[in-house]
Amino acid sequence: MISSLARRLWRMPALLATCAAAIAVAPAAAQQWEPTRKVELIVPSGPGAALDAAAREMFNQLEKRKLVTQSLVVSNRTGGAGAIALQALEPHAGDGHWLSIFTTGMLNARAIGGVSITYEGMTPLVVMLEEAVVVAVRADSPIRNATDLVAKLKVDPEALSIGVATAIGNHIHAGIAKPLQVGGVNIAKLRVVPFKSSAESMTALLGGHLDVVAATTPNVIANMQAGRIRVIAVATGERLKGVLSTVPTWTEQGVPAVFSSVQGVLGPKGMTPDQIRFWERAFRQVNESAEWQDFVAKQNWRPVFMGSAEMTKYMEAEYVSTKKLITELKLDAQTTK
Image 1: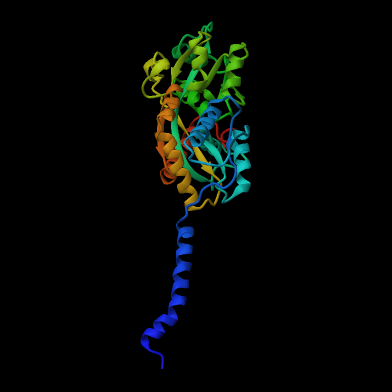
Image 2: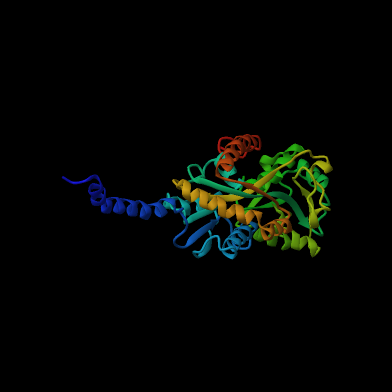
């Protein structure tokens, strides 16, 4: 007959083996996802554009702060109102190593219709900043301010060529079309020319191939400071700070219209909660860094941060208002047939 002590001693190896197995499994279960190979960030604009600059600074900060230890690559896929970039993201469902820049223009593309793919079903990760749309003319242009621009286009909406990037009907287009419509211009007849990037539209303006350019703030600062262009209006509710503080709002010039857009990051469909949490934490640390805040300020952007859940709600609400705006501007597929 085996004593109680003997039975306990006999079972001890099995108990120790079970405990050892549990200890071995515990670190693996607690381990959080992180990139294990190259991470690619797709940018829906050409090199040198504002979107491209922001994307590269995001990755620069991720690398500098060792928030990601794998190699980071920025890939430019312009065209199709952001659809080309989203097409590059689509085949990588569930893979947290693939990311794309999100812009308000993607809401516009979906609202307009006619694109091969939209952001629907992709994974919202973070919003990083808010940007303003400004309007610029050459320094020698007879258009001195927003009042002159509205007056000219009310008489003949096709009198001036207007450059935007990167697609007709995107947030840059809406950023000038909305104020012009409020000012009484028939915006359905505007002569709008799309470019691959605002850097290209600005080159065309300086070369005399365009009369007006609508763009986000980083694309006009250098040429404005050099005296080559005149920035005549900004679509924010109040004036910007810094070098663009002299630029009056549309509202100040008798056109009560306000418009702004955001930039953020999307992931592919089917990302796991651990993947989402990793990128939320990493980009939050970038957003809170002094270097990122300084970079954003120099572009005359406003730093904001939304995580995945908040970004999802923002996109849903903004789509509703964007669809209404696009319909009112007669830019959607139904009203342009």
